[in-house]
Length: 510
Ligand code: NAI
Image (tube, rainbow, N blue to C red):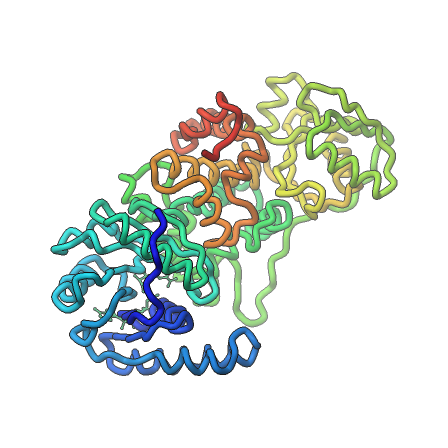
């Protein structure tokens, strides 16, 4: 499957000189290609080139590009007044408005201009490559070349093949993106490709938590950052992306999957949109960005008194991390390393478990342990700074105090959630892993590529499949199964890839 990249002296044409087109033109010029930029709007290509030159100078000032290289790249950029000037292009990258008919019309006109070897690529983030190619005489030379915003900074490029795309075209684009310093991944043209599909649960699950009154937005965001290790909490991220854009992507993936419940949009987000609360760009979204607005902060439990008896059970990663954290804080505890049940700790009255997708109340009823407290998943229990917990309705008055005191003694800030199944990080990460597993199972991409795509395209701290393997595929399956039972919803159905891995050694990678 190895192909040569396009020679770096071959001409690259970029059509659409907006945010994405400018970034792509910059990348190609820095890589050595003569770049022709076209835009339907008068003056747009000229001002885009000015903008790119400013960016190149900034890179030179910061020492990220030599002044000579910046100058040479700038000199390779030129404006083409129309598509008819692109006859010498070896590659045309389209980055115009996200509209099927407009893209089809553009590629039909290009077919009559470019040479027979030229590759046609679209930067579309949501339109089917197959549908764009349907009107072409030679759909085999069309593929998706999906950059992420801002293109010069984001390393990921999805190389998307439609039903008619020739393998050699996808491979040449893959090699070319590599030569441009990017990390390409192959994807089949299915709704959302890889990233925009697999990322849906990052928003969807917390929107559900909010709707169910699990906690407020600042608290959920803090837990996702400080326990989950995500760079931005989902609510602040949605505010940054803009609810108009985020909701439109969710709707488009949901519609494209024939209204599969997995992707159902949220009424909460729809209401924000209806109210004009678009996020940062309109001054208000989940948070208020207007001058003088009070900044929301996460709810954190006040310090509690530690009971004298603490026992840690088993040898799990979390038990080991808790033991280390308590030792570092000189807090005495007893270790019951040989314990084979699911308890993580007993402290005073409280019996602490890691969530398995059941509510604490259900688990307490089923186990007969009334004083059940559940804690959430963390990316790394030894370095997390916050953790979410929930407590069974049947528990004694001192149970919650005792569990919170234990976690505080280990140096964690504690956020108390309403007793919803799966808590925040566990519920979100298992659903991300489930979606990633389904994409792999359906032949959209490889397991290694879905992990790379989510780390590099949206900065996740760990690939969802690698994360699932670390949690343990049996645990992931149980959490999803329990979420499905407690909600009665098909959205939590378990990917066949995860089910298979449970019977075959636990690996989700080929
Ligand atoms: P933009 O609105 O910033 O730029 C689009 C440019 O295309 C405008 O300058 C417009 O004048 C020009 N244009 C429109 N129709 C044209 C035509 N028929 N011929 C020539 N020029 C035309 O849009 P943006 O954000 O750069 O998006 C472009 C494409 O990239 C879309 O397909 C979008 O879905 C996709 N994309 C956008 C990302 C983003 O975060 N903005 C990320 C990844 C993909």
